[in-house]
Amino acid sequence: MEENEPSINDLLLKAGEAWKNKNNPSAIELYREVLKMDLMQISAYDALMKIYRQEKAYKKELAIINSGIKVYEKYYKDHSGKHTKEVKAISEKLNKSFGLVDKKGTKLYNPEPIGRWQSRKEIVNKKLAK
Image 1 (cartoon, rainbow, N blue to C red):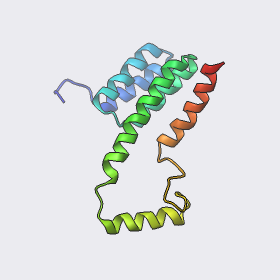
Image 2 (cartoon, rainbow, N blue to C red):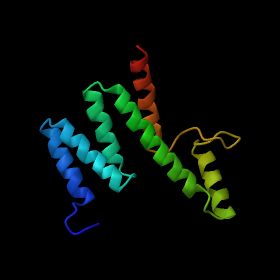
Image 3 (tube, rainbow, N blue to C red):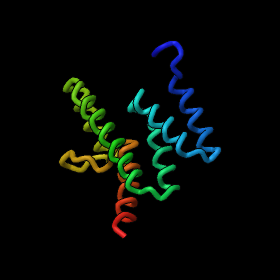
Image 4 (cartoon, rainbow, N blue to C red):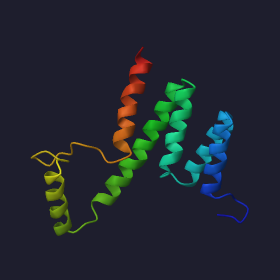
């Protein structure tokens, strides 16, 4: 990051102020800038989804949802295979005992924020189908 370049926190604060002041175009631009700097910023995805929902811009909301899900699915996929066999075995046992997987080991729930965003995606798709 260059010396004069604002930090992610600065941009999030500015975006939140813009949204609070009903300056949605500025808020959208700032939240998108945050995502350019760090694709893992859940708060920026959530805020963009809410802004587009308020504006009833469901296609744009769906695009943000899909983008966020894609980023986080890749993240979880990339980070799930780097454990020893012992760690994987313990994780599988814990997942079964907590009811997070079925008897075959198939996931019953998605990690956050994917699960929440997939639920919202279903709602948005229904609105777009009307």
